[in-house]
Length: 242
Image 1 (tube, helix red, strand yellow):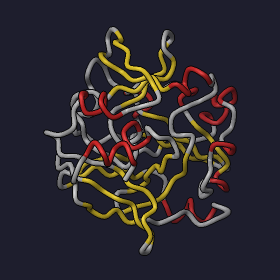
Image 2 (cartoon, one colour; image 1 turned 180 degrees about the vertical axis):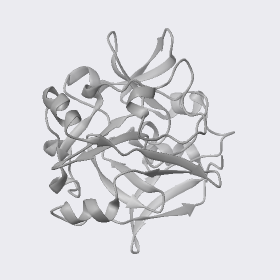
Image 3 (cartoon, one colour; image 1 turned 180 degrees about the horizontal axis):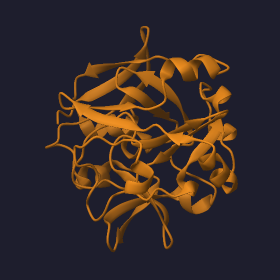
């Protein structure tokens, strides 16, 4: 899989940068040296994972909650406001563990993706959940991920972030996400529409139909273009988010 440095742009303005390095450059050591705001832990059955401080201090925190969704040429792309978002929402997997809470695992197959989530839609609701590892060191096997992902990956209802579909285009989704205590109800009233696949060595995250969701959204969902940048100093890019 090609690993390059991408930047999200809208018109002529750079909105956000997503560091994407070549496979030889990205490793657990790379993340270990560049991720801040959390601690590394060695979890039996999973390997080395990273626990963000916010997951410890805020029991209601969940991955893919502090940011917004944009639609790019790679499909649904998560734009994070968190300093660690360049890594944890585009590489690896998340697991909610009894002894650690939400923990991110980079795994060994370090493919960049616009977002690694399961999608559900139905009625007035739309929801997304971080994909967990399938097992020790197993992150992504290069196979399509479809609507049976909840069963295949054993994704629990509490993994999901649900909101009213009218708010999916808002630039700050954190305050629009429903409490997880009602997620079983939302699961019952939605269907899984996950569609992640690889084409020409590029990961695409298609799920909810953009045109349909955009019609229900109270504001237009941003359409962004991902452009290549010179890789340069990957460590500096990762730390600066550029």
